[in-house]
Amino acid sequence: MDFRKLPNLGALRALEAAARRQSFSRAAEELFVTHSAISHQIRALEAELGTKLFRREGKRLELTEAGRRYADQVRSALMSIAIATDQVRSGGRERRLVISLLPSFAARWLMPRIGRFIERYPELDVELQSTHVVTDFNRDDVDVVLRRATARGSLLSRLRADL
Image (cartoon, rainbow, N blue to C red; front, top):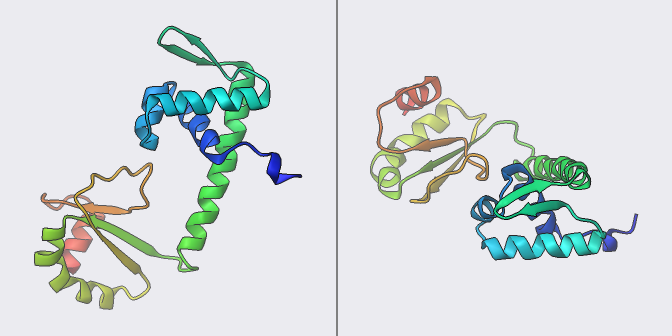
């Protein structure tokens, strides 16, 4: 296999998102690019492959049969890459806990308490992401988001009780 002949990874990500979301606009939102960028990437990919992947009827977007088969295989390959990446990022640690929270909440409430939690659960590799950005669990590598709220659910209750 000559990897130099593979399509651009960005174009493959655009294809996967557009196929799953059935919209260039929604794919663009998900990938933080413009609708035009998705459209150009898909057109370039279709030209490179020599086949149409989508039927465009006004604002309606539909995968061709070839597009559906290709998008399914690309999605599977991207999932394999994502899993491999997660495994490498975890550094071999079996239990990693990524917590996203507001900077003020982290500084005033969590930081004075996190040491006790880490001592109680030394098998966890706790990573704090202090941010104002809204978490998208489909895109972001985050397990728990802590914002101003009442404790609900077993994990949040456990965290609150342990902190």
